Structures are given as structure tokens and as C-alpha cells.
Length: 329
Image (cartoon, rainbow, N blue to C red):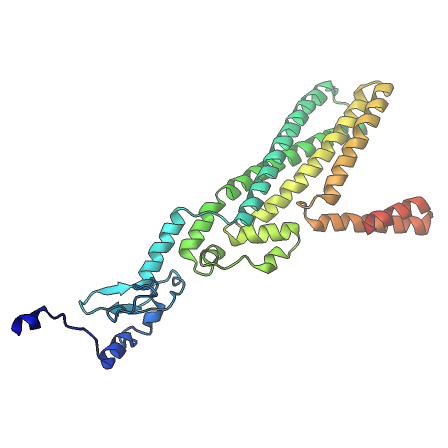
């Protein structure tokens, strides 16, 4: 009889009071319930053992700021769930990558800045060589220079300054945009409300930034991910320096040809060089999306006002119609 009693396996069915006790919310969680623990359930869906506490689906990890939400177990150890969120954030920061949209924008602007830096550096070098030739051909006996030569001096100096400044602006922009990933990583670890942190927790990019015009949208996103705000004026100076420097380069080159070459050579080269150069510069300035829209609108308004004044005074109908068409575009 005793042997049969020892061989019988006891059934461990907890009482309803005990089951209610182990599934109830602890009172010493400092405001955090068991259902909000940031780790998955310890039992599968089909396991109905009373020794496993069934948690619902886990919530996202808490924001990376420390709080006093701790759970005291029966053994006296404390589990800080905010620390688990910080560890997951640190692991993610070690291999952080920009969102695809932001990365594509940064890469495109860096490529454009590289191209502009190369072109403006070459133009500045050519104009420096031109300045040496111009100065050696001028008279040094103390007689004043003709106005055409003074204009050429001014154009050459202005082109050198503009192209050199555009090259420096391009290098500065490439320098700051090149480590945008590191800047976003710093925001991820230090600012819980930054967009790198919000994207880490699954939030999408703001629609307000995506709905802005081309250049406004790009810089809004890059600034939200760590680009310095003064990089936008740097990009504006790069764009203005590139177009103005190219314009002064072609004008100074044409004036130089008219001053030192025979008339037939000057006319032929002017017809072949200046119109294509002017058309390329104006087409980029009026249609390129990476150029700020304010100077384009200002140029269109000035052209329209000039054509209106001409129409009221001298009535040049074709010029006025052309100006209105340019403004309408």
C-alpha cells in the first residue's frame, strides 16, 4: 500500500487564488505593469502550464532615458528595463545607417559639390594664368590704361574670387555632409526627440518635409539628421559662385579675344563661344532644381519690369512679349 502511494505522481494543480496571485500586477513595479515588459513571452501559445506567466505582445522598447521602473524579484535582484532599451540602442548605434531617402539626398549633393569644386578650381587656375598674361602685356610707363583693359582686369579678378570662393564652399560642404552618419549617430544617442531616434523606433519620415520644394525638402531632412544649419548658406554661395564665376570667365575670355586678336578671329570666336556659354549658364540658372528659387524669381521679376518700362517708353513690342513669356515660364 505504501509502495503504491510512493509510485503515484501527485498532481500539482494550483488553486484559483494562487493562479490569480501570480497573474496579478505587482504593486511594487513603480507604475510599470508586467504587460509592458520589453521581452517576449516565456511560454508558447499552446502551453497552458500554470508555472508560466503569460504576457501579451511586448511593447516597443522605451525611449533611451533612464527611469526608476524596476521589478524586484523574489531573490532580491533588480531588473532595469530602461537599461535593456539603452543596450539595444547602443548596439544599433554601432552599425547605424542613414535612411535610404536621406542617404540618396546626401550622396547626390556630395557628387554635385565635387563636380562644382573641380570645375571652379580649373576656371580659377585658367583665370590666374590669364591675369599673368594680361598684366605682362599692359604698358608700365605710367600711362593710364584704356577702359577696356580696366574692365578686363576687373572681370579677371572677380572671376578668380568667385571661382575660388565656390571651390572653398564646395569643400566645406563636402566636409560636413561627409560625416552626416556620425552626426546622426550622436543625435541617436543624445536626443530622444531627434529624427534618428524616432526612426529607430519605427516612425516614418515627416510628410511635411517630404512635401516641401526640392531644395527645401533636401536641407530640411539633412538638418534633421545632423547637418549644420549654416551649410545651406554655404550651398547658396557655392551655387552663386559657380554660375557667376562661369559667367565672368566667359565674358573676360571674350573681351580678351577682342583686345588682342584680329577682328575676324574675335567675331568668329565670339559667335561660336559666347552664345552657347550664355545659353548653358542661363538654362542651368533658370531650370536647375538645386539652385535656390529666390534669385530665379527675382531675375524673372526684374526682366518683366524692364520689359514693361521699355514698352511704356519706347514700345519695343517683341522684347516685351519675350520678357512676359520668360516670366510666365
